[in-house]
Amino acid sequence: MKFSELKIPKCKNFNGYKPCFSYENCLEEGCRHENDQTKIGVKILIISLDALGNVLDNTPILYAIKRKFPVSTIYWITMPGADKILFNNPFIDKIFTWTDEQRMIARQIEYDYLMNADKSDYACAFANEIKAKKKLGFLLNEDGKIIPANKGAMYSYLLGNNDQKKFKENTRSGVDIIHEVFELEYKRDPYVFGLTDEEKKFVSSYKKEINYNPDKTYVGFNTGCSTLFPNKKMTIEQHVKLISEMLKEENLQVVLLGGREDTERNNKIYESFNEADRKKIINTPTTMGLRRGACFMDICDIVITGDSFGMHMAIGLKKYVIAWFGLSCAAEIELYDRGEKLTPDGLWCSPCWKKVCPYNLECIQMIDLDKILRLTKDYTNKNRTIETKA
Image (cartoon, rainbow, N blue to C red; front, side, top):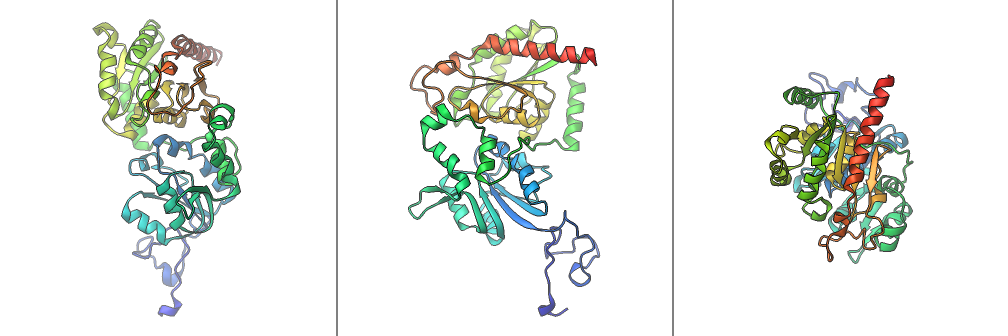
C-alpha cells in the first residue's frame, strides 16, 4: 500500500497501533465489523470535572445524547477519582482523566460538539482550547470571565449569578437544567450507574456474611459529606438519637455507610451503643474505595442522607432516599419519585451555600428526626402491603 492510498478507518476499534482484532488487516482489506455501534459518527466531548455528585448528576444526559445522535462517539473528561463513577458506563467510549497527558490527547481530537457542564475557570479555559464545530455550556471570555457559550446555557448562567432566583424562585432540577444547557430533550432519564458482574457477586457474598434477611428493611445512614461543605451532615448526637428509635423496630436493620473521611465518625456513632444494640447495626467498611462503597449501599432499601455524593449514589442505585437540605438547594435534586426531601421550614437564611455558618447551624438543628422515622416506617409498611398482595 502506498502512502497516498492510506485511508484511516472511521471506526472506534481502530487505533493505528495494532490490529483491532488478531490477524485482521483493516487498512488493506477493509473493516469487517462495521456497524452503527462501531462507527465513530458524531464526536462529543463532555467536560464534567468537579464534585463527585455533580458528575453522577450529569450522567442522565447520555440517554438524550444517544437519542439525538444514535451514531456517535462520546468522550468524557473528569477528575481522577471521579472516573470511578463513570466506570462500566455503556454510553461512554473514552474517559479522559484530568492529567497533563490525558488533556494533551483530548486537545488533539476534532469534535463535532463540546459540552462543558462546569462553571470553573480551569474547565472553561480548557473548553476554549478544544477544537469543536459547536461549543455548548460555558467558556472564558477575553477578560478571563466565565460566560455562556450558547443560548441554552443562559438560564443556568443567570441562575448562578442571582441568589434570589437560585435560592428562592427556581423549581427546576439540575438534571433538567443541564439538558437545556446542552440543547437536549429532557425526559427525566435516570442516572447511569451500574455495578459490574464482579461487584454484584461481591454484594451477594457480603449479604451472606451479614446474614441478610430479605424480610427486613435495610436502612442505610450516609453519615458524612464532603469536607468542602462540612455542614451538610447531621451531628453525631442526631444520628444516635434517630438510630436508637429505629433499633426499637424489629423489621428495620440499620446500616452505617460512608467514605474514608467518615471512618472515625461512624465508629463514634457505633460505639455510642451498648453491646446488645451494636449487634443490630452493620458498620460497613469505609476504606475500600468508591466502588466498594456502592456495593455496601446496594444492600440497603432506604438511604438517609444529607445533600452529598452519598445521596447521588443512592439515587443512582435507585434506592428510596430520605434527604435533608440546609445550605444547598433542594429544588435542584431529582429523586425520581423515590424518596422525600426535608427542608428547614421558614428559615430565612436557607439555602445559602456557605462553607461556614455565621449563625448556629439552625438548618441542621431543625432536621425533623421524627419525620424521617415516620417516612421510614411508612415505606416499610407500604412495601410489606405490596408484597402481601403479590
